[in-house]
Length: 411
Ligand code: ADP
Ligand code: ASP
Ligand code: MG
Image 1 (cartoon, protein in one colour):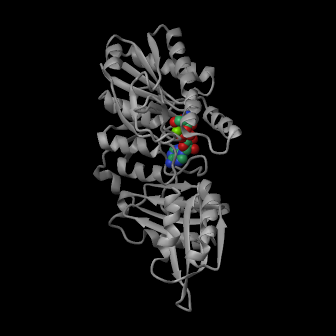
Image 2 (image 1 turned 180 degrees about the vertical axis):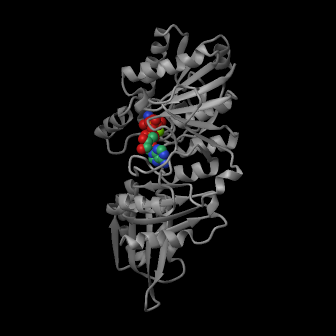
Image 3 (image 1 turned 45 degrees about the vertical axis):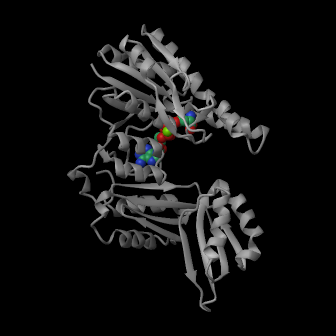
């Protein structure tokens, strides 16, 4: 008998028929003699709608009340899933985050899980009851409902699997695994049977939303392998044909590039002719940091006269207005000629452990983009990724060309 955690994403519980279909997968697993804890997302589109309601009331919703509203999507699907399981003759019960004692810090809208008290859950699982946990939500020290950030149900599932010391954590979604690039954009993307935690973490943090970044961090920390599967094609537990996210092994370094991620959520700011004196970078970035704006890539170029420089950097698209306001209000202190902003940019990142000891990856990337006439605006690298920022209009062309150039196309 195994203890497994099974998570269903928004599309997988997108309507009543789909909830019934997901319930039938859980039932099969129970009939095999396994103990099952289910984690559900809100029905597809519901979280977006709830967020829109909040913004309909105020442009800056109180974070606590925002969470009180947006967490309800998962409450609904957990209750419906428990009913669908009962309908199949199983014992099942829904658990809200607070009922499962999933404790978080009080960072509303992006709370971090502290721990889960599994005593009651385990007791009921031992008695053959299926636990259905509302994903994405927890409870803070002061008893407020918190949420874990967009895509957070993945993290709920991995955290629950780790806390229960589960034998498996299966994440059911609307694609049948992790692909070499987003299969909705790159038709020739191929499915990876296995991927290391490190590479998945890099892909997720660079935009591949198939798993929330934090869920992979947590999987790595607790060495909890994740199986990514499709709700719509695979039979649960059959031969698990999706993608296994797990420890690195030797076979994983064959290809220098394992996958390509893309991200459309950034904007770019250029400050032209910034006075080139000590402290100028601090005068730009300190006020942004104080406003809680995360800065990504930064490029500083020297201009001919040696007295001024151009500074370009990226920030989250949603923070552009605020960042522009701040920089303009600090114009005198910073000393620059003008500010240029651009929110039509895309970031494309090549990721692979095999990149570590192989020169020439960045060169081939740049040449491939040059051959297509695509201009590179910014470049960033780490040990296992190379990222470029380009104009958003070229995203699909660039992704497909790079996918082919790095031998990732499906055979
Ligand atoms: P869920 O609602 O089940 O959590 P998400 O929409 O959050 O599902 O994540 C699944 C989506 O991730 C897919 O539909 C796909 O478009 C996207 N995606 C992006 N990059 C990849 C990738 N490399 N492999 C698979 N899917 C990816
Ligand atoms: N419902 C939440 C969201 O849409 C959490 C999740 O689906 O994982 O972001
Ligand atoms: Mg998701």
